[in-house]
Image (cartoon, rainbow, N blue to C red; front, side, top):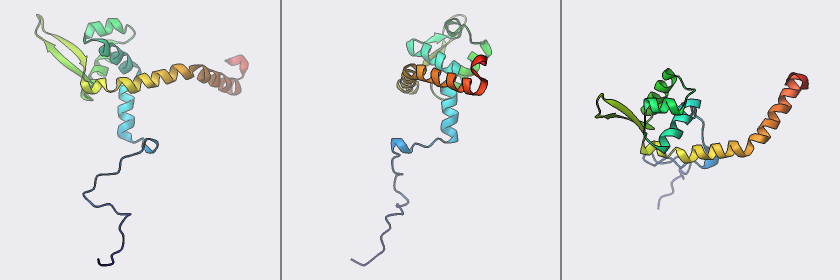
Length: 143
């Protein structure tokens, strides 16, 4: 074999990128945008409802009484654009629309449940940290 310098530091052009280890996850703009859209206040409520059963718009409004019509509409459109929610036309008279979770949307349930479990478990410690911070910044009498 001819003596050629090793090219270990340069992967072949056709090689697949190396898998990213859990601790090497990068927070890029696309990920931040997606997480902001899926984990916002109204999206979490809508996903919670649609994971239980498909719903019509007004059923969602009744289930989430604090959401405005405008906010619910934009939330559903954003989730639909991201492939998380599907909008179905029902052949009723008058024609109505039903929203349901997509197979992709179902995959987000486990990580969201994990975050909610983490929040529930650590909320007392977080509340205590917030109180300490507020006491130091604002003073105990202003909390």
